Image (cartoon, rainbow, N blue to C red; front, side, top):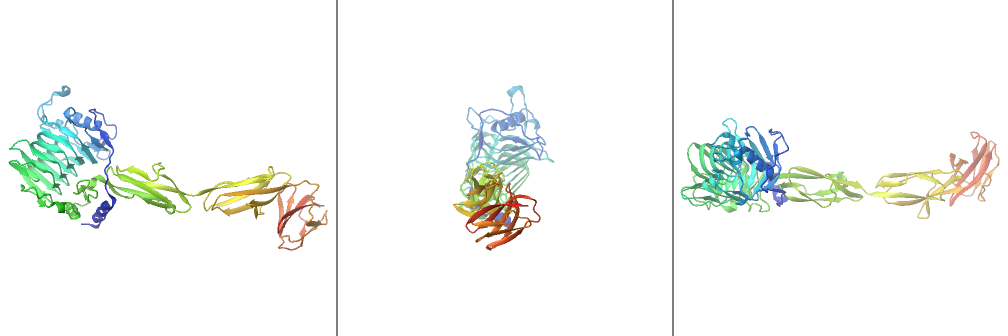
Length: 546
């Protein structure tokens, strides 16, 4: 078994397969499909039970589906009963005058002839009564020798199918390929099988039956997969675990080979069934094990079968066509960790969780949902992105006194951002310093710091007038001055020269000297202010430049 198959199978064991699919319930209505163009690349989408009933209605009125493709996008509950029977898609040779359409004898127009992809979905609660010659989800399916019809990736999980030529999937098929399908309904008729009643020039690959198969009399031809084969028929990679009634013509896989060439490869049945000329008997324990999954996959180029981790199929292998990859991603990757990635069967409820790393918080999922954990239902391969953001903090600034000026830079910052605060003093005010928790944190008019928490900062200003500004701790002389000015005071660390509207003209580092000389040669005549930065605060002194 290739490594890729082993890996995916192991993932299936680990992931689990809970079933809770979204389902469209049939109420007897018909609804024209509205999506797709019917091509292989753009099939008509069967999005409801009403769409499926409309397909049956059109085919049975003679609508030719040759070359057309259809894809089922949801599970369907046919809600069947004697009062609401299912009319098979393609009624074959049934004589009917319903809707004014006299169908008469069999022609290709009353058979399905196209490509139907079930998308891994299930049909439940089917009820087909004995009025139909060819009975099943599909009654009659007829292709051509050079263009086979196709039925794939669909299951009839429960219900009752009765008729003459009847199978859970197809009543009678000719020039048809059936793959990745299974039946769980009870099928009863004359030529009857779990997958198909009569198979003529048919290929059946990677299918299984677990439903009860009954012959309606002692002459019935009953098989676990096919009632009767005609022409060239090939079966590969299939199994049957359903009960089969005892009649004259019974087979654990094939009821009877009427004529032609029948090839059965890698197809198996429970050894409790003893009447079979075809296939390989296996014990129950083996058929529930990983080795049997590997055996079924051994002749497939890609993974088709998977291990039944949660006993959804009583431990027997399930089809990988109904399992999908769910990929969960953290964005940014350093923002946190995520859980929920894995391979799941269609309809599984998966819980996605996002755990933020330190200094980050979860924001939302890529589908817009903000729940965490987030429960999603698997309907196909999908990726979910958990968006994280750095924690955000508010930087608030109080102006003291009110009217002293304004501050640019307050607001919301993310963790690790650099906050930059700038002051703009109002007229007749000078900036003094920044304070937080009653401590001076900076005297620079531009204050920057790395944000790692919220801050409440006060910008302190001092009001002055152009006539009377003095300081007992700092002296300037001569005043007025022409070319030089001396600033004297104890413990001066820095001297700032400002004009009368508070703009900084010059700054000088003093380094604790008690006196410094400032050149005024580049200053125009006028009134200026000296702001002396002291060890414990600051002082303002007015001087005049001549």
